[in-house]
Length: 338
Image (tube, rainbow, N blue to C red; front, side):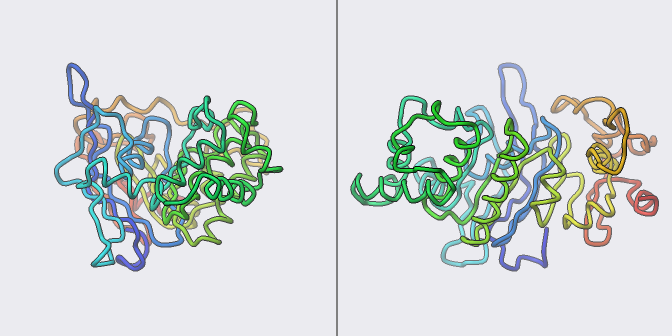
């Protein structure tokens, strides 16, 4: 767990296991994942596509596909330190979950165009979201919506509020998604690849907006990304995921300065650097294994330059190493060489 014990913890995910059931098999896609989030903190869930980042985060608000099933030991505690308000989100039915989703915990989805209803104006979308949790008139809700658009930097919000999603640029749509997420001043924001398909300048604007809102609202943020540059700039603490498991975790500074898992080392080596002029960027050989395909040993062994017979035969635990933890039999040796 990040931080010292459970101090100021607003979310505590324990032993999360998610299986996807199809016609022929029950496939484990997330296995025994645990992480915590403290008030005002930004954590990063990092890894390649298919590692289980989005499924883990969407489990918090129960937005996974209907064929997703959770393990009996899975627990997701919201406000675990408050005896009166603490709740296990895994035990909530659809109706009760709706009182938390959107109001206490908000989501910015990866694709802003599909995240906004194409047949409704921004005003219709936002007023509906406001009135779902507040008993106010449509006019009052519309005024709140306009002010929220203004707060996220949408120019001429009085005009934009009557437009449709397809009339906005990608950066504008993503700002609208952030405005929607912040309508109820949520305590937690889940940002799933919030800068995907945006140019570099707009990416920076969106990230700075998220940070500004974090500082102003003192909210907590779960940032899902494969971009280590974004992670370095935005997060306080990192969880590196690979093949449905957390393989390394620790304070952002420690992970970048002293990575202790070969997968993390590979991700960091893949970042383009201005002080080097290589013709070919580094890539990790191979691909993420199909969920459920590896039955024994370290899941990264097939792509790891340091793998031994023990790595292929026995899966390591998360070993404590300084301020971080790493799921690697060779983490002590790697710590001395990096």
